[in-house]
Amino acid sequence: MPPIRDRAAEFARATESALEQMPEGHDRARFQKFAREVAPFADQAKAQLFQDLWAWWESGLKRGGYFVEFGAASGGEPVEHLPAGKISGLVRGPRGA
Image (cartoon, rainbow, N blue to C red; front, top):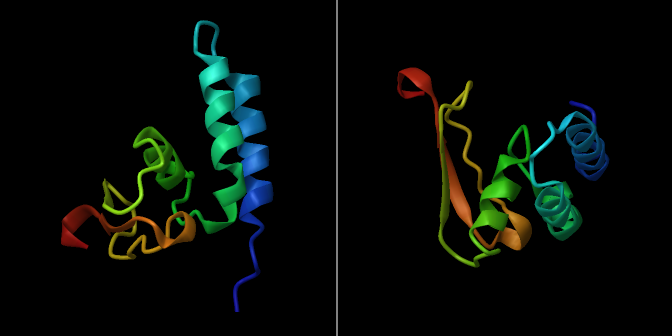
C-alpha cells in the first residue's frame, strides 16, 4: 500500500516555493488569492501539480462541468474528484493512453 500523502501540506509547500521563485513582474497578489481560495480543497486535488485546482479557480469555482487535461504522462487515470466532486474530468495521455 502506498504511503498516505498530505496533499494540503504539499500544496502549502508548493505555493510557498512558487512565491519565492516568482520572477519580478508577475502578479503575486493574484497568485496569493488563488492559493488562499483553493487551499481548503488541496486534499481533494488529484492532479500532480494541482493544475486541477488552478483550472477550477480560473473557471470562477464553477460547479458542474468538466476538466479535461491533455498531455498527461501516464494517461488513462480519470480525474474524477475535484473539490466536493463538483467537476469531473478525464486525462488523456500520449499514444492514446
